[in-house]
Length: 80
Image (cartoon, rainbow, N blue to C red):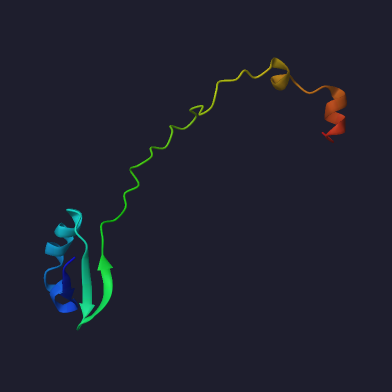
């Protein structure tokens, strides 16, 4: 892991960014004291998100009663 000064990092930033994109880590130091580490950004490509509306678990049937209109008694109980 190479160490560079802040002045060198500012002067050659694009060079160091290319090295980081290639997987290298770079330490930036103020004088001889390390103050930061330049590392590749985690892209999160490990797990893909499911498409919207896709069923993740086993398929299931919705009973017709669940979609039936409420009775007058049920409407009254709900205050509608």
